[in-house]
Length: 193
Image 1 (cartoon, rainbow, N blue to C red):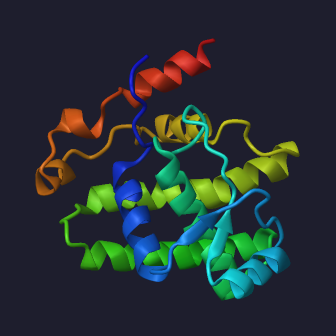
Image 2 (image 1 turned 30 degrees about the vertical axis):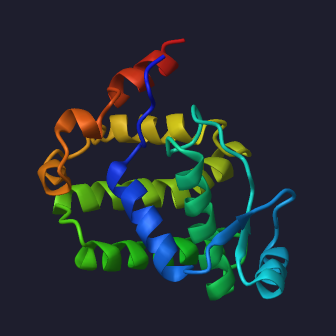
């Protein structure tokens, strides 16, 4: 079986950098993990860190590693805690605004040059993960079963499936390094089952 890539390499890099910047003390992977805003705040006050769920399923995560998945969850929950953003529609919208601000700041100050196209795609993936899945839940009464396939489907429909290759040379990567698996084929294979 081929190695699965991150749905968006730029967002994966930003996730690790932003998480280190806003949480120099790190985060804790714990089971059970906090599941309400009150539990998240209490955990943060008690431990000085964000507590995240150990869940990681490579075929369903938007990231190809547990470390990226957990860092993203910590970043997301840190925004809930620091912004006192409720676990509802207005709260999730506010969390997305905060995360988008972090992403934009990271882009401007990144030690690795990132193109506008790569930033725009990362921002789209972030918004769809934070808000698109919420809209899906409101429409269908449940969250998408597979966040990875949900995002790949959205990107395919918007013809944004290909990672902009202009960021590759700046990162010292070739296009093949950015896309170890053709994500369009991954979506097609899943969708045609």
